[in-house]
Image (cartoon, rainbow, N blue to C red; front, side, top):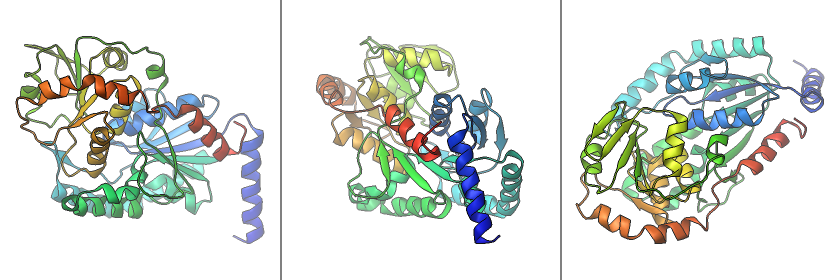
Length: 366
């Protein structure tokens, strides 16, 4: 294609974004866990005038399909078992992904050709930004993971192998977008051209008023922590447990099915939160002013960094062992008021700024 044709094609696409009230947008979403899909849904709901077509896999498929059309496509995945990353299984899954890479790439190109998007978004998804670059479609990356390469000075030396492996994966598989924004409840120690905004919160979170109740909310995005239930039984107050795919009551524990309204009601009204190291869950808890006790998945450097910053910023504590001392809960609860005071000094909602950034990316008028 000649340079003149490229210029005309780009100019026409820009006019369609600027002049129309609706844009066709392909949105690639990493489908492991809940956080990526929750963030992507929050973005799409903020722009109801646009037409979205999602590309995802795994858990993300079911979450996104409730509201939008979704094209299923594989993505590099991290395998977690017994609350730790399994490097051999992860490498095996990656090799399988690479064997089918060319075929999956062709299917996404065909999707672009059929849908004819004016723009693309990606939340840690591989194929959409790659194909968008090939087809000269502007692509905005919006996730939390791209903040990781800036956090090297805060990574302990014994964790550097997993840190370097994660940075390599980000650069190798998730670095093809044309523009990058990271959402984060903490600031990285290094400067960069990456634009960083406070967390993006779904409207259902913003609609609820926090209150201090008597119960604890416990949530595990990966139901693989064998010692989680015995640990929760040590708490001398009611604990509402989400994410373990069971229901019923066991002593002070009430196991609840995953349901957005009930979960957010219980989150807004709890005394404090016990969760993994996922960015979305921690951000929502902090927005409601809830101290956080975080047990990150072992060898998952993003979760480690999130939990480490919860403790470093005085918002709660990082749980470092699967068999914590019996005094941990007592000590944590004795510090709750101090945690709450420090949380009140933070900013945990970046929705307005992010809307402005996305509108600027799309051309200024949406």
